[in-house]
Image (cartoon, rainbow, N blue to C red; front, side, top):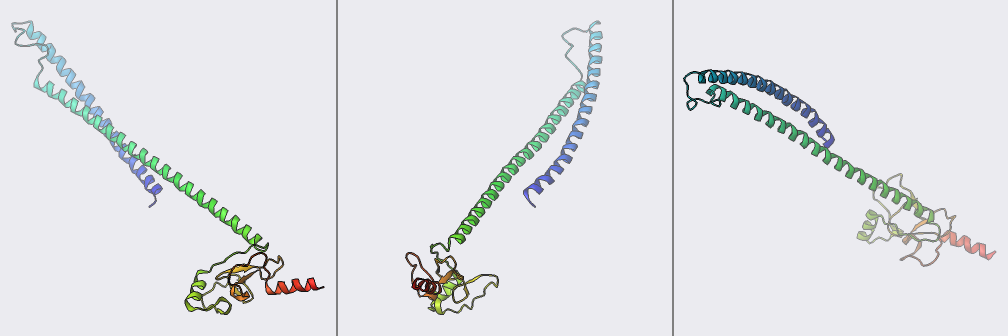
Length: 233
């Protein structure tokens, strides 16, 4: 389950939990109001009884207006307990909402990070595509490139077979383009012919007798022959 799905599921459960807590708060509030109403009536009655008693032969030292019955005091304490319970429920509801707000902040922060990573990856991919396009266009303009095919190069190095006589028995993608006079896929080091009209373009070093990258312009055997024949005319 992704973070978004988990957060959505928590929101649904949060609504049910809050509904229960608010319902309990309403019940406690009704109970508190009823308890306070009864307590007020009891206290008023006891105050009236005390006043009536004081009009007789009861001395002030034995009874005062603040001396209520145990029942009245218990009801008042019960009202305080109900009020405390209401406060505790309200704090629990607040903490639950606050926790989900913090989770939402984390989700938004994570989403922003993922968005930036995707944008950076897309930009890098676009940049690499542009570089690859430019490299393909400029490959015939006298620039030499080294192509490395890891599997083929490793096989050649381990067997000691030169690329000119190398017969690739490795699995090759039928859709992969072929190069060179050997009509094989790209492997090892390769050089590009500087003739813009060269039909092959890329050649393996070993197939054209090269051991290192040539300096200056380089033409494949066929293009070199054509070039010399044109000069001889």
